[in-house]
Length: 378
Ligand SMILES: *Cc1c(COP(=O)(O)O)cnc(C)c1O
Image 1 (cartoon, rainbow, N blue to C red):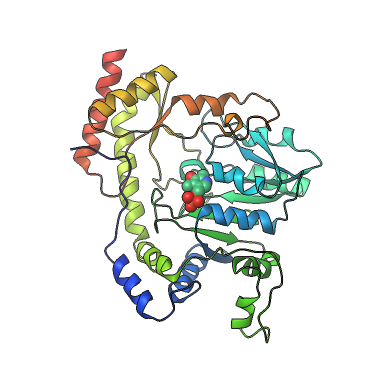
Image 2 (cartoon, rainbow, N blue to C red):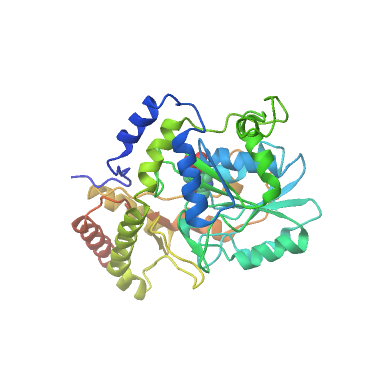
């Protein structure tokens, strides 16, 4: 039987809570389950304010609006990331300045950020690739030194930490994704985390179509009006109901994913020791949330042959991002700098099946085939 790359996990309570939401009489946004989800993140992780959105892309777009990114403002983004990390700022007219990946990790090279900062730089958007923290001390120091807004793309980073502090809690803003490929899911879904008190009131307005509806329902104003720009960023409470069932099981989900991750790591370590592949690197300041298991081949040829070989064994493995500085949309806006490591990971990285329900036997089978591939070919 084919081993898929991903399989969305259901805890069993999703449909029940969705049924409750439907029959509660409040199925639009900001209902009972939305409030439960907000409370979960604010209490469990200490985020100052959480707002559920229809996607992580939406959360990043909200952050771009709140940060007031205007045409010609420069925004620093890693090239090795998903489109949305850059797209949200491009929609505001921002100019993306790409930074390379680290040699030892696909995440942004923190030490290469300072050299691209100019008087036009307004924000840095670090991405915690694979749920592994960026070096936030370096990034927060740059934020202070140059007065830059930090927006953490923590789409992979739920329940993961930098020196014990949750990802998404460092910048003025953080964003999470609940897309079905992430650890905790709602089909499509996301969250904006607001850690800077001064942005909260405006965030609630932008979230609800530029109206002061939130303040009206809290009794803070006596009529509800159009007061600012915004959009309809809030999902239906039915989505929140699905998400809440997942959040109740987060410990169990994370535990199983980490177990899977460690099983892969142990099974492939010998190949790394022989120099045939590289396994994920975890800096001592970063935790692991088992979001992704990837390996890095020495050459693009190896990577492509490995993918083909595993597909023939009915194992779905996939590569990951293609550098955004070379994307058809942005290549002509890019300033031309070579980003060697971003290109390297585009060509050499492969992700293995990783989901809650993958069995020990399936992981053993995948590990055995990968070992066989490299021992046959080298
Ligand atoms: C998944 C992902 C997003 C987008 O998340 P959506 O919820 O699908 O909008 C953004 N950034 C990164 C790094 C992602 O992996």
